[in-house]
Length: 356
Image (cartoon, rainbow, N blue to C red; front, side, top):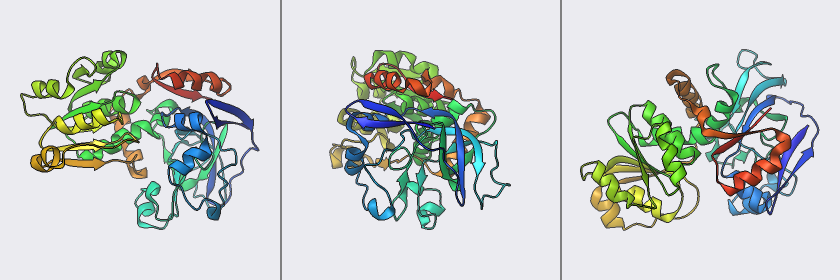
């Protein structure tokens, strides 16, 4: 089978690998869609080994993992069960089932794993597309415990989005415990931010979107944003205060990841406001008394989502008819991977997906 391997220095290679065979408790997925996530660009630009070390993964050798072996990229996998290994309950999953893949593997026994938060495994999580083969391939082998059924109402591309970016947005909304009584400011209107806007709007929440890209601001209302602010032209905090009668929003979410939007996400919330930090990287630099303690604000770190939350997200999208496919502006075949990532690296468009 074919698989995309990131080499670093903005290079990749489509390599040939043996077709996988499922072992005990494993399944093989025939890929139908594999999304391109912004975090993939770290591996595309810097190479897997360097990024693995920078992320703090430890004791890989003791877990039988060679950090220098070629690893197939992609962690937004969606497809059809092609083969099942021994020990897989046919009442749970069988050949032909439409599935999404929760892209973390853990020990299966610690409290985090048992509650669906495998990425927080006490013994270290194995992340597909990072230190285990991912979805940019014809086939993918995973534990059956990693599978989530894909509702018929959701396309394979939509399932790929839910497997990371859109699921991450849903997880952050859950962490905020948001409802139609709230107002939400989203900083950073990339795929995760737009997903947050879509989902929150479907929950009845009034959404204010902020970005410094005029193109992203322009398209935001198509994703449920009631008020779109170009942060390169106006003071975003002042504008949000104006829109909310001087009080500020009840909830904010940072999907941008740099210092200024994170500060703004905190400072645009009202007293007792809640802020979810979603974007990876950077620091939060605020005045502890003035910005947090004195306003009784709560800052929440939100790291992707649980496996149960992924299922909930898919069914919410199916029930509410959320048009998650609108996130994808570029559709590619696997043999176009070099061109796809070259364009994605320019970050001029939206979200891309490989279709099989």
